[in-house]
Length: 185
Figure (tube, one colour):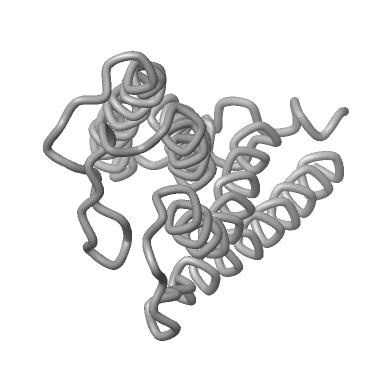
């Protein structure tokens, strides 16, 4: 029996898991909405190269930059910085939504759900660093003078990402034990 089919739909789930299924569906929908809204925003972002809308972009430190005052090259660099900082969040939303869809379907200890959890944890760790890199690049391209104490690593994202990543390994081990037990019986 392969690991991916070891426990595809868990028939042993109790009726009390129904509430978790409902909540998982809601979380999956919210994460999917966040994913599609973020993706639409990222797709629309290059339009600012052609039509730099006034009103300003805010960097992480709260400095407002008018995109119309920047050259096309600097706007492109600032957009790249924004994309670099936002891409990990997009992947976190995607993998989180996929994992919760599987939970809603009763697929709790399946290889694909575990892989989505592991990927979400990995991208959380990356996001912890990406926000600092985004800030530095944005400041560079938007010609904002950085203040040394402005650099913000996100240690919370790093720790939560590491915890989620390790939880995926714990789930994989639980899946392996369940498959071993099922093959004995």
